[in-house]
Amino acid sequence: MKQRLGFLVFLLFSLSLYSQQHLSADELFQKARTAAFEQKDYPTSIALAQQALEQSPDYTDISVFLGRLYTWSGNTEAARKVFSSLSDKNVQDEDFFLAYASLEYWNDQNSKAVEILDKGLVYHPQSEPFLLLKTKAETADGNYEGADQTVGELLALNPKNTEARELAVKINDLNAKNAIGISYSYSHFDKQFTDDWHMAGISYKRVMPVGSVILKGNYANKFAESGTQFEIEAYPKLSKMFYLYIGAGYSNDVGIFPKYRTGASLNANLPKSFEAEIGYRQLYFTDNIWLYTASVGKYYKNFWFNLRTYITPDHQNISHSYTGTVRYYPKGGQDYFAFQAGTGISPEENRSNLLENETFKLKTFKLGAEYNFSVQKTNLFSVSAMYFNQEFRPNVKGNQFDVSLGYTKKF
Image (cartoon, rainbow, N blue to C red):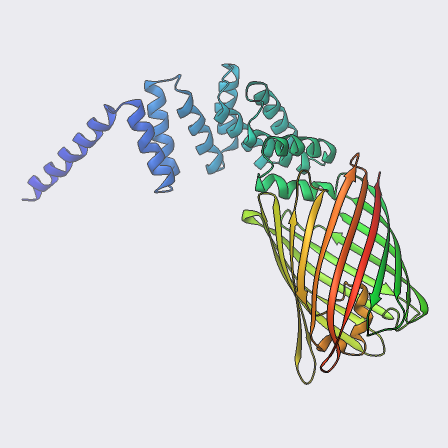
């Protein structure tokens, strides 16, 4: 009985081996794809792809797939050997250039990846995957000017490319090493305060390899009194995914501004064009006010959606602030329309001094719009308007109307 069973197993194995040896290159290719994608068995997939190429050495799709398999397996040199051989044959397939450039980009050979993609763009000048990967490689290589031009070409082809839109916005913050900005805001109250508010600010931003640093000086006239504030903010990079926000401010004019303010957040650039942030803000007038913040953002085609909350605990209750923002980008990463709605007061607003007397615990509704546009890429203009309806005393509400203007020069 054992001899018969052993003979049967041997016969089945021989038949399987015989049938596999007589499979066509297409059939072997399909089995290799199944082993790779469904079973995650790369060694078997590589063996099947090599067997298929023995039958059809000029089958480009199988060669490209074999190069990808070596890439996914971490065998970089074997992958480069496959792709170099295809390059010597002057292969012009789109998938070849993308697979070869991806290998180099994933291994931090960004200049080589750009070189491969530039060659591919000669044959496929409107390839969105080429332009997207080239933008990523140029950004990773610190060539922000080139990346800005490349992503601009991509968005001209397809303004609704979500990943390109996300990259365009991020590259916009990196494309110039220096930026000087000025701003002015005007606030009018129908009931809460007799005098209008005037606020002005000046800022200087420096982009460095470790991240951006911003210095700010603010002036305000509130309650018919004037005050100044100095701030510093930094955005150090931790990795491709994570970066920090760190901020601090000081003013000797308490009431117009908080005497001290600090803040820190961990920010993440997540897959699928999502963003997230979690952190804290602290304001000190005569006592500390601690606020904890979290937000989630999402790029989708021409749009950016964001929801942010501030939570302020105390001994009696917890106060909440929620703000939803939608941006629409008609072209690049600098020009957009924004719409905002929410409840409560946030420490980033000009009204943050109202946190001192706990009016933030009363009901507040806000609604606003903003328009940002650029002239010759280095001149940035913004105009915004915001409406607030606030319960400034229990069961007593008033309206506030804000108008803000801004200009930034990048160089």
